[in-house]
Image (cartoon, rainbow, N blue to C red):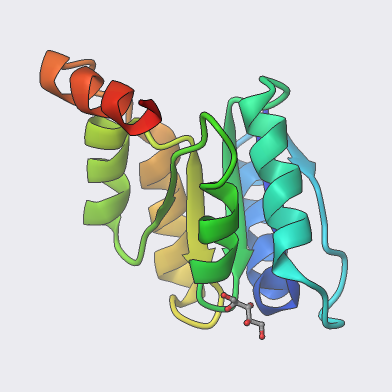
Length: 142
Ligand code: RB5
């Protein structure tokens, strides 16, 4: 199960990502927001981060205007490694090296086509499971 959430700056992209996940037959849970009316990104960042940290969902996708505020918020939650990605190289590397469990996107930064490719790369890349990366990830939580 994929947790997905956004603020008003990410709402349109969230709706497109939901359609894409449905086309791929992937299940998601939408934590809002539900329109382009102005809301506070920390509310939605926290909801998705807790869903992932508590094990309710395996991965998360968060979108705000830049992806910055919502990723900063998510990374305050213990066990969350939220990665703001603007290209597929970053999405692949953060899965391989950081075992990132939340993808953050900027709805006002990346176009729809690129965003969907980033989502696919993030979801389809497994953690490398290499010792040096496991050690470094463990050090994050120290
Ligand atoms: C909202 O205007 C905007 O500040 C928000 O979407 C995000 O970019 C914050 O980091």
